[in-house]
Image 1 (cartoon, rainbow, N blue to C red):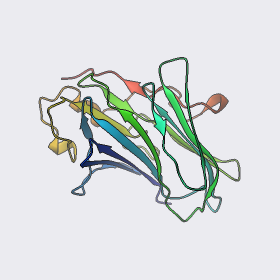
Image 2 (image 1 turned 120 degrees about the vertical axis):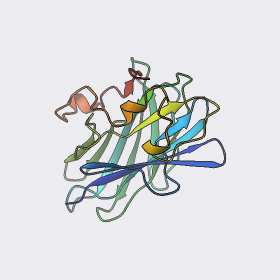
Image 3 (image 1 turned 30 degrees about the vertical axis):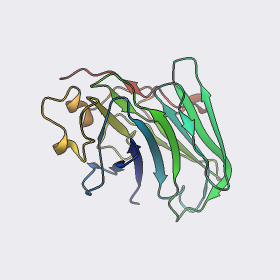
Image 4 (image 1 turned 180 degrees about the vertical axis):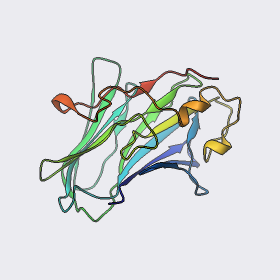
Length: 205
């Protein structure tokens, strides 16, 4: 089964920033897709699950944003939630709806991009299905079957980058867009219904 997830972000009022993760590869190749956004920009990140668990519909979506004050935007037919944890993150979620297994969904969160240039923002996400199965997009390997979506923070004056190739060679943290990250629960488990830490500081320049 071809499993993939699309995370879309809008930086500032006019720039559409999207990031696509596909099974076995990182894909950000369409003209409007972006893998990096400027520091300080107001951004809306949209998780776009494209299928459920086999024939079972998605009934809950959770994303861990690696900063405080993220806002879960309204999705028709769902109830949105946003709750800070004790580690400076925000757990955003949508419940009470049902996304058919053969339809793509759109679950947006809005936030201000942190000022730490070179920081890699990782957004572990969980789809919970009606049959009690879960699809956990929390793997730190961007070429895995279920990679955690990631976005690099660029200098505030930089333009959003459409793909890795569009990120300047000397941009702080650039190598992290393809690096294997040591995220919590690397085996993909999600204990206590939580999503692992999603903020990874820059280690390369």
